[in-house]
Amino acid sequence: MASKKICIGVGIPMMIVGALIVLILAPIEIELVDTIEFVGSLIGILGVVFFILGLFYSKEAVMH
Image 1 (cartoon, helix red, strand yellow):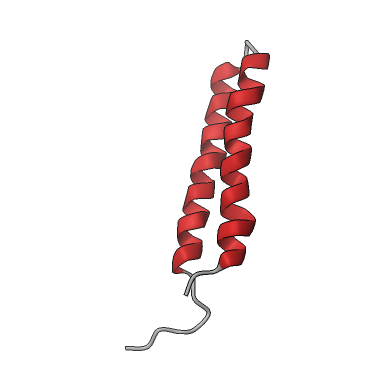
Image 2 (cartoon, rainbow, N blue to C red; image 1 turned 90 degrees about the vertical axis):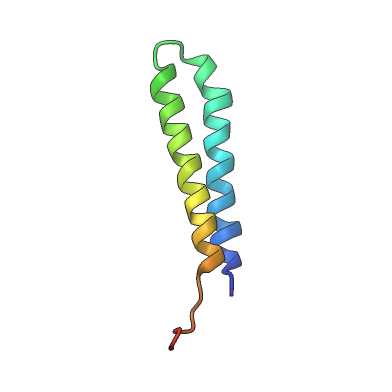
């Protein structure tokens, strides 16, 4: 049972913001390109992690 709130509300916006940081802000700041690309990539990767965790999240306890 996937959690749409986590996938759509957290994961996808983090991926978009990370990509926008890398594509828009990195070319503007010449001196800090490596740092900006690292931070943008980190935000994007965390967005992917939250998206995947949202797919596997369930409120019901799994009992075997």
